[in-house]
Length: 397
Image 1 (tube, one colour):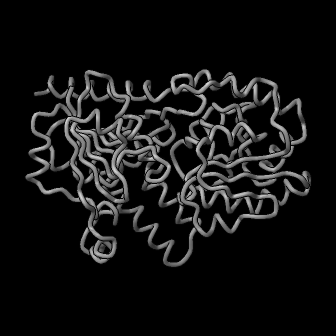
Image 2 (image 1 turned 45 degrees about the vertical axis):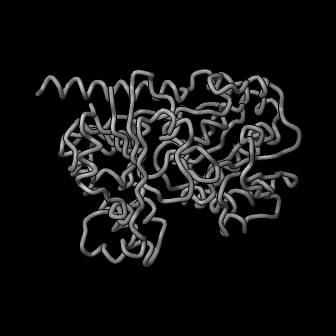
Image 3 (image 1 turned 90 degrees about the vertical axis):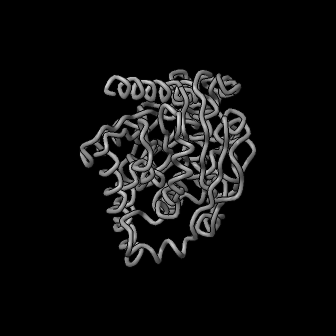
């Protein structure tokens, strides 16, 4: 099977050039079964090229510059597309040439879904998260011009999702709850394909036994790992600092919080102090997780399934999470969920002070980690979905 892959950004898992979405596309494309070939078209919206593992697998690679942001903002009154979608355009002649002879087209990201109308093979869009719902959710946390902008982008994304679904193409998101929400809003075919994970997974060459059951790290440390310029992560850290951390420190005065991740902005860097250590990008996020009693994700915004939650569990580090941050994950002693800041603080304090509960939670992490999907399995699932689409299309023609 041969694919045309069009990605809204360069597929990369590198900390210096990627984000959660580019990480997914990088691992997916690098791990596709050997009988699947692809040509890659991506938009150069940031510095850096696709990962070597991706470009080596590709039959050809084509980079396209995006339209300037200022021009896209000025164009908003004259287009129905979200701003970042309008920035990503391909000449019809180029798209026709690249799609000639392929069995299916794989679009990665909301901002290339509008290109589906320019191609004829079976099309699947890996939206990852339902962006119409995310922008609407974020608007509820915003005010003024930001709120108006988010609501406008939500309406534009919803229109794009509905148009795409009405064409008979398939949308892919990362968990069943989001899939059902999109089915309800679009009336189209939406499939859930969960992400793979890397940290601690045997297929990644990391030994989960580094977090031996019952062996607790020294000290009373918590952790947060994630892209520190991603708005839901910035919001989650702000809520943690304002509403959860004071309750934890009141109960455990020597508690520490380590915040690790790439591209920390001013809002995150300002959290440094009062027991919070913003260390930024680190070479081994597994080491951060393994040195903590628990990781804490307190966000109210964001869709999809948080890779960092899965990675924490695989590293043997229990997770304390809000309902939104735990989305798409099975709960248990390894993943403690709290709806309110007081509940999150109570879970965190218990894992910091109660050695027996902390050891039980770490053992539960090892058990849950053994059931986690690798990126290879995820890529095989996506390839199977594409094959089914190609088969159905050939039967109809």
